[in-house]
Length: 200
Image 1 (cartoon, rainbow, N blue to C red):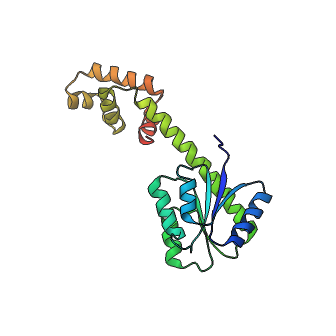
Image 2: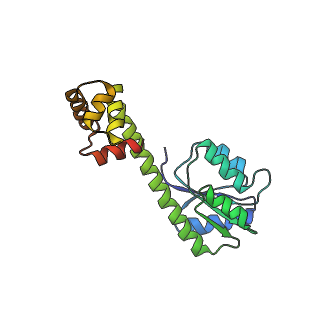
Image 3: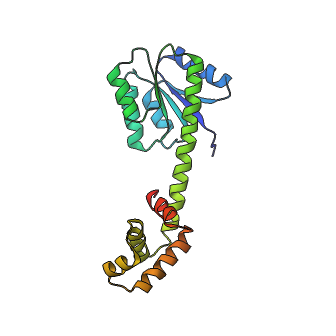
């Protein structure tokens, strides 16, 4: 599987697709261009490594609708919008939905390149976060139901004495559960445990 980050360009204007592809490829990026939102969705059902440059105004499905569909399908990648006539409401809607930027055509090549670099860095950050969350989730599956229960109470700030009373078990049993939790998760303190619980 090719894990190289790609720049996906989605624009119904062939001249724009070609010029953006040339600009990005000249600076070392791998570009995959599409003339329609549906073409992109069909080819990138589970894509996540890269960023997308979307035209705001396209027939059939515009850029904002495509962004919403990407979110619905779990295609998690940073989005940069391009528009020949961007409106404030459209810009606000795009940014609220998580777009990295909203640029107007004709776009300044140097500005676009900087935004693409930012977007690819954000993509890398998202992937690292997902990997950490997956790893943490795997660690938590090693805990018994009772250990999970104790962990959530510990993270919520309850003392071992409180937990013992709440679960009607002995203080010593709570302490044993706590020791098992720390050992299985690899957490060395309460802060690490809370972060691990919060990232899953």
